[in-house]
Amino acid sequence: MFESLSTRIQTAFSSLRGEVRLTDDHIESVLREIRLALLEADVNFQVVKAFIDRVRDKATDQAVLKSLTPVQHVVKIVRDELLSLFGETEGGLKKNAPTPRVVLLLGLQGSGKTTTSGKLGRWLKRQGKHPVMVSTDVRRPAAIQQLTVVGEKADVRVFTPDTMDPVARATSALAEAKAKGFDTVIVDTAGRLHIDDELMDELQAIKDAVQPSDLLYVADAMTGQDAIKSAGEFNRRVGVTGVVLTKLDGDARGGAALSVVSVVGVPVAFIGSGEQIEDLELFHPDRIVSRMLGMGDVLSLIEKAEQALDEGEAEKLEEKLRKNQFTLDDFKSQLKTIRRMGPLESVLGMIPGMGSMKELAANKPDEKQLGRVEAIISSMTAEERRNDQIINGSRRKRIATGSGTSVEDVNRLLKQFAEMRKVLKMIGSGGAAAMRGMKHMPQLPRGTKGFAAPGGKKRKKGGPWGLIKTR
Image 1 (cartoon, rainbow, N blue to C red):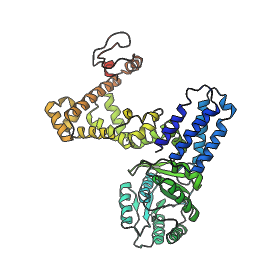
Image 2: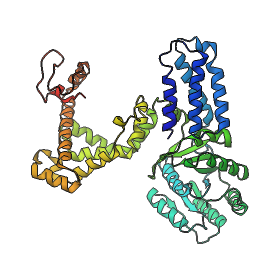
Image 3: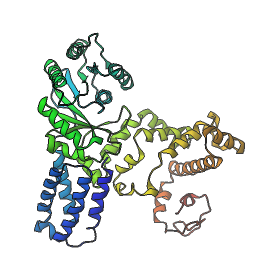
Image 4: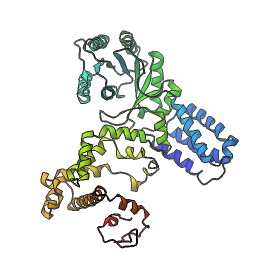
């Protein structure tokens, strides 16, 4: 999300880095690039104009131009104005709501309402809630069955009343929630256009019957400004409390997110950033803006890690590392944990300073490579995964055939794993001091076999300093 926009904005700021003092011409040059970046990202042109005017007024202030750190001042102004585009309201559901809370999902057909229902149910369960879902989409073939399948993936109860009347289905689900102790009812409605008066009247009837505390408009971010216009009409006809932007893992340019608050007047509540049932995030404006400006997003990274990591597994891994018992099985398990955190490129974007490196082809992470590594390890026997030392030439050939890779790929993996285990052994056996000394090494030419260690002695290949490869 926002990758192209983020790159353009960071490039615009990089032109100011060498300037000791800023002039009006410098400011106009940067604002021109930011304006083009926002328009190309499909941000509403009126929003862009107002944004640029506000930034210009603040950036051309004499206190900024004469500052010792003018570039940082301009970046801060842009950051604050981007935050203002998103509004001050934090994402998520309303803080106060009657029990059971009723959440009504509405929007156009194909925007992802049913999938979002399951994702929201899963998100609520992680918050310690007990949700139940119901579908009122009686027109689309297999819509009710689709919600049942999604509910099974999310491990959320789906209520299926006998009636096919949309209003009756919603009211029955609310009665079921009150009787069985569910604290949240998620109502998945049929997709409809705002110009379809019959369907809009039906939606109004459902709203009147169940009195939802949250009306979330589910918008496909890939449709850009069209999604925002439709959200505005739904807000006018029925009332919307928040927007859920879906498919932000695709080639969405991000303009919808930046325009929604200004155009529709309601905040972004959640964002869908993947196909997995866990891929629904609270919308945090400050974190999104930090990513856009290349400042990273450590808090989101920590949250993803906490969701992906199992505390019991982490303790077992720590014990194995301490005893130097790290095996290929453990290595495979850690690869799966990393993949559960989401696309590698997205994870890298959350690390401060890495955002500007993602677009470089040499640094672009290869998701397929992780799959090949897992396939190679999975093609080994249990004994081979426990003790990689027994893997001889014939075993390597069998593993390569079984995993659909080459013997060279198997050799490369085993070599990298052996080097990794040496480093882990050093750390586990109190070699941290030696590792700290490595950062003082001089830069060496490519292909250097051995080199001077801190203290002047030359290490043999394979020693602690020999693990470092220069490029």
